[in-house]
Amino acid sequence: MFRLLVSGESFILKWRLYPSSKCQRLLSCNSVIGPDRGQDLSREERTVPTERVPSRPEKQKRVCKVILDHFDQQYGQELGPLWPSARAVLLNPGGWQYGVMLNRFTDVSDVKPRLQRQGFIRLLPHTDPPLISSLPQPPPPLPPSLQCFIHPSPVRYPGPPLPPSLQCFIHPSPVRYPGPPHRRGQLKPYYLLNAASLLPVLALGVEEGDRVLDLCSAPGGKALAILQTADPALLCCNEMDPHRRDWLAKTLESFIPQSLSSTVTVSNQDGRIFGQSEAGMYDKVLLDAPCSNDRSWLFSSGPGGEQRGAVRLRERAGLPTLQTQLLRSALAAVRPGGVVVYSTCTLSRSENQEVVEAVLNTCPGVELQDLEEELALPLQEHFTFTPLGHTPSLGLLVVPQQGQTWGPMFLSRIKRIH
Image 1 (tube, rainbow, N blue to C red):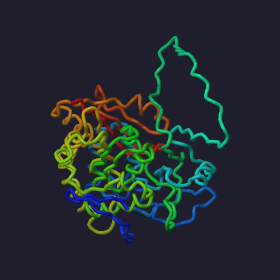
Image 2: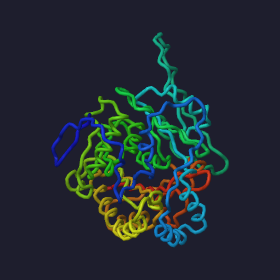
Image 3: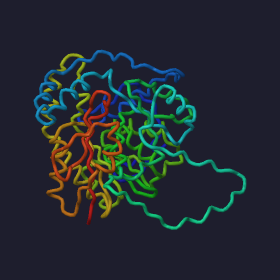
Image 4: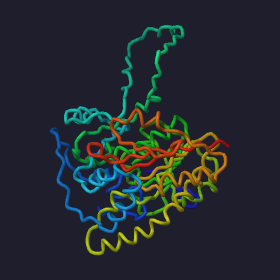
């Protein structure tokens, strides 16, 4: 159970079993076939096979023509030659790749070799913790004298090492790994997700003892990833929508031990007022903002799909205003010297670069931080990052491409100076 903060008071949120109907929200960044679809996939209570699992044929989805026409016009201009290949990926759910993020809070010793036998590889470099022997150990050798080596030509260092505790496995093909079975009294050993959704968490750089706010947290995949990277003093997972908040709580209960119930809280505030109610309270803030989810918006089912698409496009025009308000609130909630990571799962320039630019131009005492050397260069083997045509870059944009179907995902990091 985890603490639920409602209107400033603390309650205990107990585990409840909900029916299998999916909780969705129109403006959600992480809806059912968005970046954190993995939690929906993991509801399948199947035994994990020992042989490779081929990609299953996806049930035929109906494409929403009004949305596709709008994307063709907008993204054809904004992405240029990258759009036709990205379009082909987005229209083929059966070809989407999924990552398998391991849960460090339970035994995964049988999962890793099974993944590797099936052709999965590590997304991030990882060093297993050394085994601690019960026998007396000799004292460590004295540190050698400082040595410095130089290279005769310019060499770009690929950035700081990535968090070793965060383990995610990916497959070069669209192989669907089965969701973890639900076993009473046991934590789930892994979480299925779009691997690009880990990038905002890596950019956040959570360290031991940090106070962290996940401002729009449901369904909880990024909160879980944060807890795989470090042990924060506090992780506040905020979600205003009650259905999505229940979904968030269910995710946390399935993956996180009860010993963390005093560290991980679930709140239901309007994210736009956090900057007032908890000004300067956090070291790191993740804003995975509500956005026009490109993956899910392209498809509709049942009658009225085109009408729903038209409604979504009208509501889309108001999203940048909401996103700007949320980003300003996030910057007010972080302490001086702390950072905010802004992310979306859309390719839309008006919801990505233009939101960041508007906040930088109107919020004094903040500074944009470059992520190219830290993330883009070390991970360019796995993700397709596209130049954003702005110096300095306003962020990173992952565009899905054949063989690298991750994304869409935009992320930007802003530091509060004072």
